[in-house]
Length: 300
Image 1 (cartoon, helix red, strand yellow):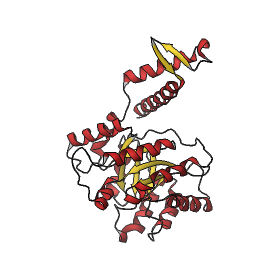
Image 2: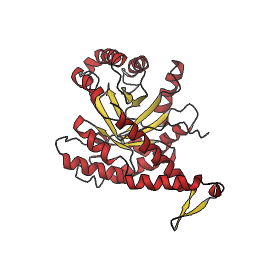
Image 3: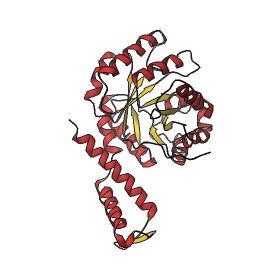
Image 4: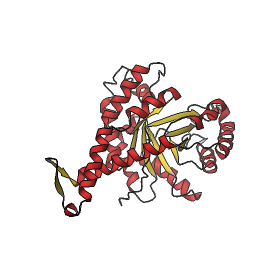
């Protein structure tokens, strides 16, 4: 496999899911501070409304595209709706397409081949929902497709509702028995340079429970959280944001390695602490994330 660093740097702290056939919800999206919005053609839309949802979404995005990352969740390609969803998605020009219930690398490859055959722009990314036992067992092989030229895979989204249903693991607070699976997805995502988005928290009225799960997802290393209600955007942005002290330290590391006397060094002494070039890489990523957050704050 040929490795390619082709994953765009994006803010994905808050990823709001919006039903594609809900006109009121669509109308509010541009006023929200979500980093990304998933316009859902799959679970949120009844089978008899799929066609009108596609048409409504294409019309909406042609005139009301939000100033954030735009993702369209399509139906599975074998469902009878998937190819029509992909055709509509190309017409709507999203930043990414989210594939549901991905269970093997072949699921990614089928989508990649279809997009290539239909002249999709190279910038169009794929996200994958990991939400079945088989998908979880194959997640490492699925992640590898993000390391190939033309692979397009850029991000994993964990779907715990379906995974709980199929495994019969109860929805206990703290997700005790699900943490190993969440870490497995995170580890495989990082192995291929992918982002990873934590699962939805179903009770949007339980603010304390939501914030606790955000802290847990952040501490596990996730980039952000999939959301089901606008009220969850602010807390997600806060918890998956950056700590100012860490940003200050990152900028100090960058400045130190920028000094002429440190240009060829792999390790330097910074305030009595050994700092390696791997710390510089981490510092550059953190500083870039902080810059992106500041740019989003500055937008009206």
